[in-house]
Length: 277
Image (cartoon, rainbow, N blue to C red):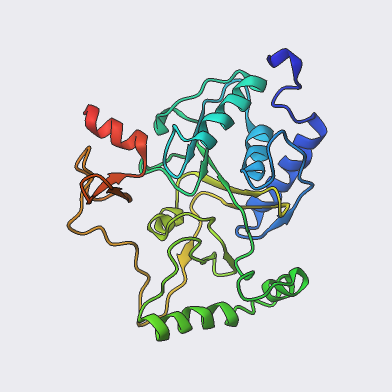
């Protein structure tokens, strides 16, 4: 099938344009770079931004891994792998350490990544200020002026109403003390992995036509008040029922037959590796 397509599906001009946008995003960490989002044989909202980044970067020497909410075997992950393999013929893997490019939706792998790897995140809504300001021209001005008071007010209102900040995913973070960024719908458990990371993080929003990046060794701080520090999800007293891990992000599973609740590693490949050891 590879002979029926241009390598990596996109035409070479499109890939060059996307790579130029990636370079600008890397040069200005956290800044949202507009780009000409291309049409793909996948509906917008199903990861087209991340797929375009992957197709623009992938080459014959790469190895691809695709995960969806930590799983290598979900419908989204399996079909993206089939599509990329069909038009590139690159090998795919489920092992984080073996991949040079990892495309993900809603999770960052548990295995620490290296400087030789790129993590591509699919992003539905890249603008962290969208929840407080619906107009694009206004949010652009707010970023330019570092006017982030409304988002701090939102966090404060959450504290007053619930006694804690209730944002579970897409928890906003400050990049290099300059731009507030949406880390995509990853759980806030994964936010600390963005800080001073070894790998390059790329974020692609196909429907919104935006690319942004976190280069290696970049300062990324989740928003928090001085007297109320940032807190991740607490899985104290819980462990994965398959591998016994207590320091990973766990999915809660309800067994309707027995009425019991179980916990299981969200990162399926990590869980398999622990069990194999």
